[in-house]
Image (tube, rainbow, N blue to C red; front, side, top):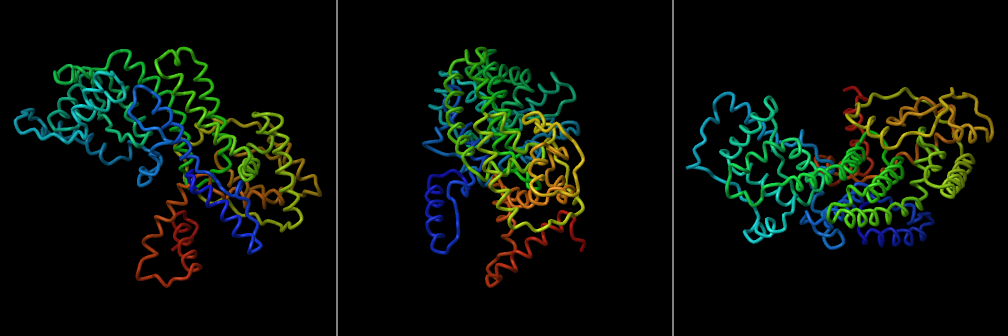
Length: 460
């Protein structure tokens, strides 16, 4: 669930209510906080503190709820609006956009008042200035045509258009900055040809600020993309990703070259404080710890990266859960690996960000006996699969029958609300008014069948 205070109350109330039905529910561990929402809060906190941004403080106005109707991860390659603008390059080649007469120019609304624009130019705020420039570029066919001419002049065969962001979606702002840095020369030249925009021209220092902002936000974009995956478990990556983001912001605070830029030190420090408040909650959540330890490339040994005391506590928590499952052990059955779609960036980003402490790719003993399984698991026997842990478990479940039971339960928990919300959205065509009498079991079977057919598990 997301991190709204009302959900904290909901979790505690649910725990109290379930006691009446003799159902154990730990509100502290049972409440899994959505990592993409945490990232949104952290980045929004950073941007709100930067003098170069007009973003609201997340404690006052949380943009995450406004952006829920959009995909959590923004990919400009899948944005139909951007694609439509870039298709105009082909129209240029066909002579469709040869006219440059501005007599019938129709501008799009900037949605910005004159007083706000004056404030932007006076403050010399790079992000706000860039947002205004981009808005002006895409505001009319004639201006887009003039900008495309500049792009062709400086970059020849490059056929890209600037990205108009939505300030309530931080990763969209990041994409706008990335694209602007790529088209920097064309943007500067275009602005020089429009006298009314001279007050908003980006200086070398402005571009330095934008470059620093882009580099600061890049890891958060990568992690958001990885956590938005629907065909791989995500809770097992939550604590490692928290740790990676903490290291990134801590290193950024200590980077004097970065913090010498006005406002960056306070902004990064505020983001780090916001992140740590959720990071320590994640470390105190037993479900997060167990899921991480169930990942074959992390196991318990990964917690040594944080602290010896954290490692000892993780050992205690996971061992207790292992003993609990050992008492009710049911021999798991192996199954062939199911076909999965290969991720576009998960392997490189996960390997770069998280690494793996497991150094012993030994074969798995197919005949585990007694408590030996626990020691074999902790030693790293069988190696791991960083990007596809479920595939690894399908192949090695017989060698770790007890840990396989634990993994199957805890790796099924999602560390992001994305896939859950996507599932609810996909059910809207099934659960209609004319099917209001369908039983929960029937809906479950229909939804499972739909997903299995999409993944190639069922042939129709």
